[in-house]
Length: 81
Image (tube, rainbow, N blue to C red; front, side, top):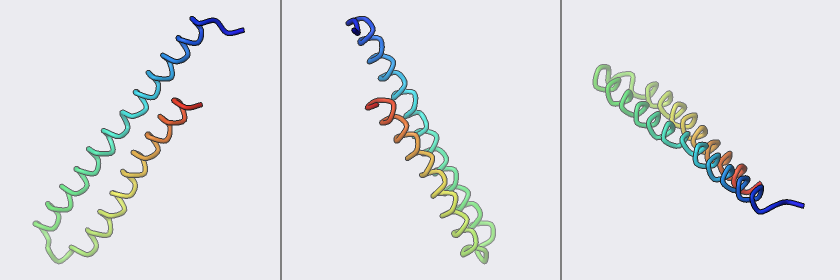
């Protein structure tokens, strides 16, 4: 039989863990900003390389976004399991 104290500690731990897991979203946002900032700098330095730079930028964007989505998924798993 679970006591009220154990239940409240477990709930508090879930909220704290879910909150800490969402920190990855801030990192993903910063990463996306860095990727597109580097694209602007790269195109301004060498406009002829724009197609190649844009391909690499989309790859970097996808990887950053995937990390953000994984952090949200982990937060939901912690919160609702």
